[in-house]
Length: 317
Ligand code: ADP
View: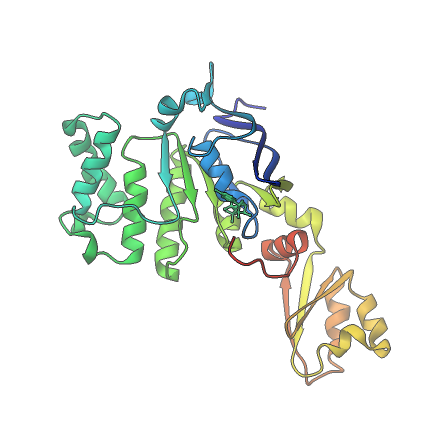
């Protein structure tokens, strides 16, 4: 096991009688993107806040190994030294509306004690990275949501951090803006940066993350590469069935044989999900029901997420 860049061991946090983060351990290697996924209230934001020294844990350790080697720094004792090596994009943009794009980068760089000359040299590259060169002097009110998110990312890079903490970096963006953001995040990982990312989008998690940690009720449910997690926990194929009468397939005794072709059957709203290793047989049997519509697809991360955390809606915590 190579030396991690960042390591969390047995981290716990309680609010009143509720344990919102429960003995959580994980590590991030240099050049790795770790995704933390979980329903609302799972403890993702609290975990990130503890990693940033904004919330103090009840127990456990958070350590950062500069350059992925040697002596470690510990949160919260070495909070300033650790933060100097972190880049942060929080859920809500905290850019300064009175400044232009370039000025936002300059002002933020000064927080790290960087000399203006150093920051000014970095600004064109950061703007280019954010696809905002043409907006260098534009005020924030002239930027789209996607542009603001990219400026937040550029700002998080001003101190040339080794580790980026990104809390739902693409929430609220349209598909084009998300794809551009993904492309930029992939570039950062290719450059050797490490990323800790929370997201509600399973396609985002599957694309960007080398490794995923599924969190629920503050506890780690499982951890692994997206492909491994799917292969370990799910049948390879899913047949979705919907249309009038689909729900009868789940209950009626006359469809027992059809159901037996699936390892697991789930219902969500009007749709029945058959998880199966025999999609061919199942689809052949379903041709007896021309009134139903079917969709055959490989099992994906969303299926895994719903299997582990359930299909019931969690209201925003
Ligand atoms: P997530 O980011 O996964 O949605 P959070 O970390 O925001 O989850 O919240 C986890 C749980 O901790 C929730 O039940 C939330 O209500 C509770 N919580 C978070 N912050 C506080 C706080 N400052 N005081 C009391 N409870 C809190």
